[in-house]
Length: 212
View 1: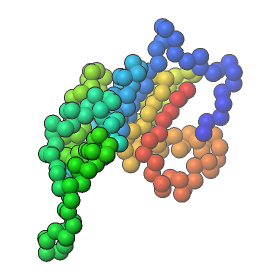
View 2 (view 1 turned 90 degrees about the vertical axis):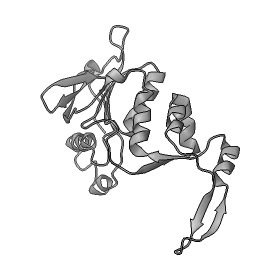
View 3 (view 1 turned 135 degrees about the vertical axis):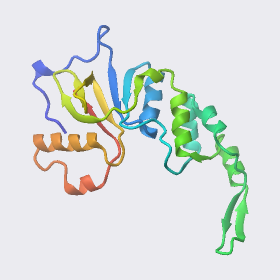
View 4 (view 1 turned 135 degrees about the horizontal axis):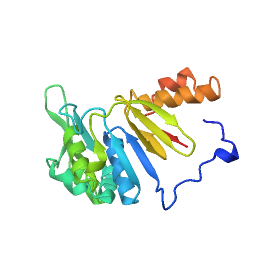
């Protein structure tokens, strides 16, 4: 989306003296899961959440076997399972509440995939992801992002109070009303007029990233 830099301005990337660093904007499911992946890869990061981690609102969330496999890989599955009520049978009920179809769906899923389906409150899921992070000190609450600035060889996130965080890559995991996505759209259209169409903006892609 961004025009190539002249050869003299192209970043040489991380070095031993300057390790690669990722700035994650947003502490929801995507942001916390990415933090886990970066820890597994031994990549430095900082996570900035405008509110609090695991806020006391929201509805339930279900994690199916493919998601459980990922949770197992990042070391969070056991902690998530502790916060779930085991489910056995699956019911379809009519308007009168009478079940007209039921079976041991969850048992069948477990036998076929090795993982079951988990359902729990969203806040409990987020808390489990946070509690299983090795570097919780890298997660910062009440951090409202106002701008993202691409520099020569780095990228900076400007906060509401004027402070800045600088790294090599910014990942916008800040939800459906993502400020990072809006900023990336603006930068793309400044480079190539009309590159991001109104239809694409309405599609609300949830994940964006800046790099320099």
